[in-house]
Image (cartoon, rainbow, N blue to C red):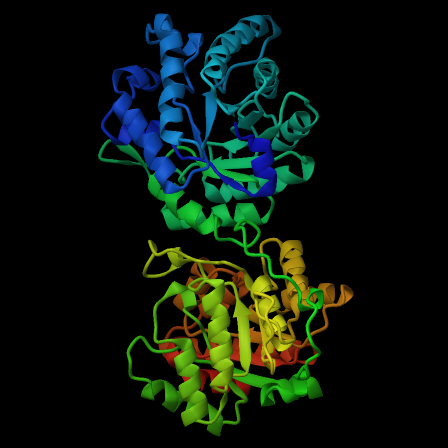
Length: 609
């Protein structure tokens, strides 16, 4: 039997989504005992379990939340208590197979507005023991005591669950203010659970949407060292044609799920209103995140016993590298490859940049997981036909390790010298959400691959002589949700051999300066090229703020952009803001990489004048 405590310490786990609201959406009215459906309509319950397994859940919960004596009495079903609970585990176990864990779902005896009184403790204890004994006997992998609103009741249930020798997780429900209806604060409950030896893990579920759940998790995490889980609702319900519908999209739900993982949450799933579609998108996105995906380990070249090679210094790799090595300011303009086979419009824009004295053309690799003409083919054409250096983004999403190494060697043979190594956006962001990502390595691993090639060693430890002379650039996100995690990731890239970095578009200069200070304090002193994006409208600013991972647009800038009344005013204001940002950080960066929004190169050049 797999142990959730072993698994959840190695990587964050995906829990399933709602059971009750999915049952309701299939036309089963709320006056029905949903747990009784394990007996009366097992195909329905089994189908929901299987949908969550297919979606990518690592843990599914039995349909036994309210299958205790107190709750079943209201339906006149106490005599079927054992049959319901046994059927609940068997249906979940059958759907789970050998790879997915089964959590025995146990709900509270008390309602949220009731008082916890000591003389009820004995009755509740026996109620929990009766149900838990059956669930444990059927072979669950853990108990999930969920939607509790009284810390004392949760601890009482945990003490009973501990008797059966499986891990015990407790999940409480609080409002968006982080308090129960009886006034217990999340911090108080988490500290109590952290000190309770009967509780192996804890979390929050129900009662709040993803945004509120994120805020509450931020408050809770500093108070415990145990695994913390979050299962938020799909927003707040709205009545539509007599039904309560949860309106949060899988995309919105997923973005918060990723952010929860980044701040240290070890298990994410869904509660009321979430569906297999929510969990499928969440699972695909989370399981490709750095720190979650199990990447191929790339050994450093220093561990290889190879003949000495002449390693090419940074200043001799390319003109861009030479300027950086001399401490001169560099400039680049980002131009995205076209969606058609006609490269001429792109080449014309690059020619304009060359005439303006720009040092390099920055060419993204499948931005936002979109399919365009090959960025490598685009880069080769630009260097050959325009005669301006390129900074070729190279991401880990679409190719396995063998293919990536072949591309790097082939690009170098074709004359490409300057690469920006990135992990890449997950497919769910783009036009092909069902496509499969590869991510054999992340940006750190691929940086080590390039460093090895520059030292004459391929990924298999075979000699490459002469070695490559690739200039190694990497990305950085000064406004990451979890700054410490991003800083460590950045330092790992430097240790793997990064020679310079290009940041995400900077809209908060102070955040960049804080990041640079923190990096320099740890010895991260490679040249930093600041990403700059001239906004064109309030809508453009809002899209970047809400839809583009890693980009943070402060409210003050959104307010400034809202003052633009025409398209021309919006563009002028966007250039003005970009210039102000450049001026503020100019003495701390090695240059500027300016995006050309919607392919409007003139806006980027105005920023750099």
